[in-house]
Image (cartoon, rainbow over the protein chains, first blue to last red):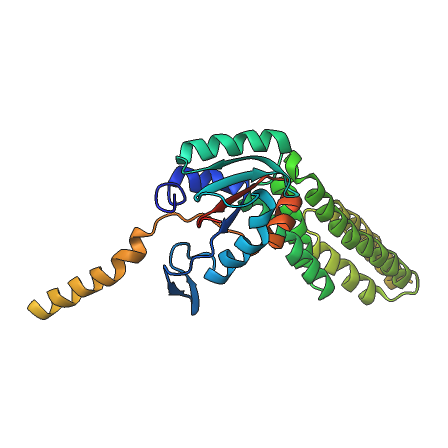
Length: 227
Length: 53
């Protein structure tokens, strides 16, 4: 199955719709160097120690006593077995069995979408913690724009929305600070606060609130200049 | 010219295995990582065993 199934382009494309675990205690196939790391020669996205540890962790869960390899088990996200087959399978058969498992589980995120969301939401959180507001807003917005209508991404979209909402709340509080600065006659400070919001939140509704506040500040400054 | 041809042939022989590799399935790095990712994505897990147990 190593060469007939796992290298098959249709299988590789379909396998993005589930999580794959390769279990083998055999390391005789050796390793190959990939980006300065010794990776498994059969499957260069993992190390041999990975498939050995997966074998020892998962092996006892699905078979009582001895079993004949290759063997395939398809399970729920918590590892509960749905079905299994001992003996080789064609890539089409594996895809069909996994499609049955997908129906049992319900809508799920493909690995590309998952990695995209991890990158955007993780990046947004990091940027927010580092005070890089524009970067955070762009990352959360990208996640919402790309995945907002994907039912499988619901909890992730909520995370992105919460992240964006936190930034918007801070922006609103800065608009209030700008208004206070305006009332105190510190027009330069007011404009500086509002300009940052206009730049960081470009395209967001709160940027329009900043536009309006900026007009108010300019009008107040003009009036003050006439006195 | 002959030297250049030999260099080109040697390069092709070195590069071929990498080019022939093609698409690769992404495997979980551990059983715990597989469970964590499957729950986060709400997707099934395919576990495959390749040595008699």
